Image (cartoon, rainbow, N blue to C red; front, side):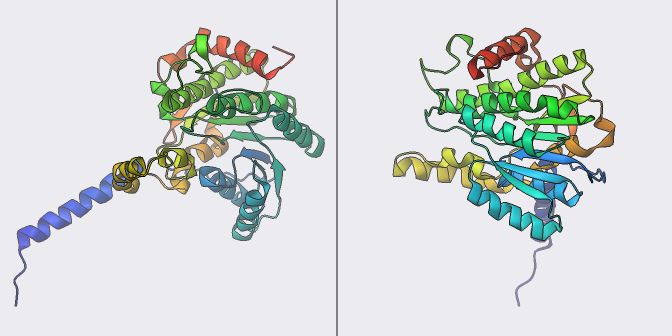
Length: 327
C-alpha cells in the first residue's frame, strides 16, 4: 500500500487555499444594501446579457419596474421572461435601443417620456469593446459612438423626466481601461490611425469625463439627480467577443492560448454587476455625485479623468456631434 507524503499533502492544501483566497479577492466587492425599490422605475441599456442582465435581475427582485433597453428585441424578450420567472416581478418592459443610431436613441427617449410617468434610475451599461474599425449609422467611430455619444444623447433627452422623479440616480459603466486612455482631440474618430485598444480606452475615459461634467452641471442647478461612474471589474461576458474574433486561424489559436488560462480569474456577471447595484441602491450614496467607483468603493480615477477643462471640452464637442440644441 502506497504511503501518503504529508509534505506533498500540505503543499496541495496550502496551494488550494491560496488559490481560493486569490479567487475571492478577484471577485471584488459586494453590494450589501437591502434597499427596496418598490414604486421606482429603472432603465438599463444592454440589459439582455452579462452584467446588464444581472443588474436587471437584482433590481427587479427589489421590486422596481425595470425597462430593458436593447438593440436585439428577441434576446431582450427572452431575458425579460427569464428574469420575470426568476424574481416573480411582472413589472418589466422592453424598449428598442440601438446606440449606434442617434435616430434610435431619440425614438427610445421619446417612447420612455411618452409611456413612463417617472424615471428614478438610469444605468448606461451597454457597450462595445475592441471591435474592428466600424462606424455607426451616423458615421462616428463605433466605440466612441456607442459607448459615449449614444449614452450622452440618451441621458440628456431623459434628464427632464429624471428631474421630475427626484431623488434620481444615473450610473455610467466605464472601465479601468480609462486610465490608459487619452482624448485624441484633433482626431477623435481615429481616422489617421485606428487602434481598437486606443479607441476603447478613449471611449471609457469619455464615460468618466462625461460623469464629471454632468455632475457639475446638475449640482449647479440643484437638480436632485446624481451621476457616478463605475468600473465593474474584468468580467467574463460577451463584451470581449471581438478580442476573440481575429481573421486568421493562427491568431485565433494565439488568443485561445493567451486568454484561456486567465478566465478563472475573471468575475462572473453577478460579481461584475455588484458595483452598479451598489451605486443604484445604497441609501448612503443618495447625495454622492461625480465619483468613480470600483468594487463598491469610491476610487481615484486617472489624472486625465480629473481634467475639468477636458470634461467641458468633451461636453461641448458631444453636443455638436449629436445635435443637441441646448447647453
